Length: 313
Image (cartoon, rainbow, N blue to C red; front, top):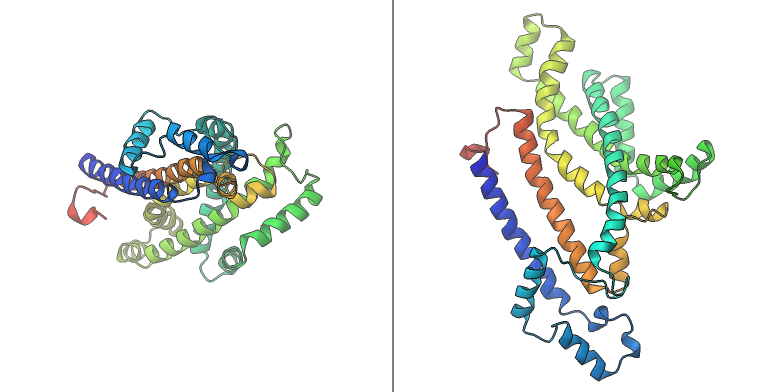
């Protein structure tokens, strides 16, 4: 396991290095306006002087080496246009905790509802609960999320008497955004857990247990559910981490000052340094999620060993 993890981490560093290098190089091809907050008012001499000061006139390999040195020290640079002169780490420190809180709450709700939904659908295959759950899953996957997000906001605020916009001082304003963020994962967990449990139910060991007279409930919960849950575990870390960094549409819909809309805002304002930092963060989070997914699978099912050739991906 440790050998496998070491290889995965090494490959992850290589992948991250490639992503960072490509993003860094492409952003150097962007207009230089993205590095100045008052570009329109600057003279040509001032622009050249500032570019030299920031090291942007140096050869690209020199800039890249310096940039990696800054990353190792935890320096992501300063915002140029979004919040001129403010450290990016300071910007993230005010937004990330809020998105993390929403992400954790929505994931808890997703697992609390999605996993029992999938188990119930599998146990009641081709019965009313299964059909009802299928309707919900099809609706969530077929209808654009922006549509039901708007309906949740519009009617949820009327039914529960909740403010339409998020307020840190009012805990009730958390309810609708958390529900909105969790719906996609509820449908995902329900759909795939049902599928995995139905597949497990048709295997020989289940048929043998039924032939021996083992209680149907015990078969479903102690054997079928346990084995079906293993492949689903791999998705949880990535889903949690990506949800934690925020949802662009939900956060903008409820005016939540989190991470969700930050990347879009940075691109719109042409803040190259902030865009660069956010892309690195998102890439790192995705890679960490994949590694944690493999680790969780081995914890849930000790029979899985990535040390063997057949266990590697």
